[in-house]
Image (cartoon, rainbow, N blue to C red; front, side, top):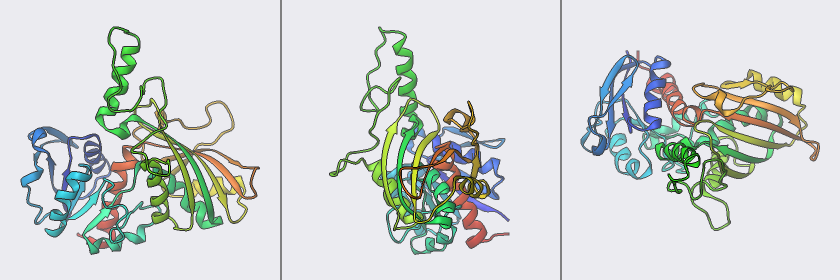
Length: 340
């Protein structure tokens, strides 16, 4: 036996990727339905070799459905997720709405699978921010060995993290640079994104950090260890898909780079590509469509007693969103629901 699965927000980038990954990983689906807002009602999406037509999220009855993967943003989630949960359908939410709720587990299956049992308090599970998800996959096995004190991370985040509008803006501006009569001013982003970088993702907070940077701090503490100190600078770059991160880690104990490399090679969800030669590392273009979080450039930081640097790359539409949500669904089915 399999599960009755709902995809809410099936016409967006993440919703479509959820459908692709469910099919690729042969998730045990007995029945699947796809939901969208009324403006996208009737849009067709693919699930394996099937074509599905979207239904109206506003009028859908979640009674009798097992799992709902939500990719509709915080406002819509606030309206529809509680109704789905009340109807007995477990919600796995990709928005930021429930991530910091103490009664809602925030899960990366390779890192804190034991948190899955906490879903029962609200029948809701939160999916972390894309930049956090890939980083904590790398941090956890190293933390288990040498205890992380502090993390300094700079991100290089692709425009797909801002949705279809972000992708379109980069595409349109890139073309317009070669056609000066076709000016494409910034709309989705605060400055030109083509051939530029923007040190600003989400809104600014009182302390000068952005909400995206705050998310990385708060979520790392909730998922890995509240004692870890994190400081982040999050930057939008002119890349379509794939987030990159330069991560500096300070440990309680000494951890040799060779041992760190071996630990990461054995860790779930990680692929180490780390040769000290031209091209001996992974760039975002190469990670697109892959399930793994790629780690490169592992090396000692000689400026502190117990420090390492590494380069972390992942497909943000996959591990940063859709893949992690499906992995949570797999964990939920395996550890809690246990059908068939």
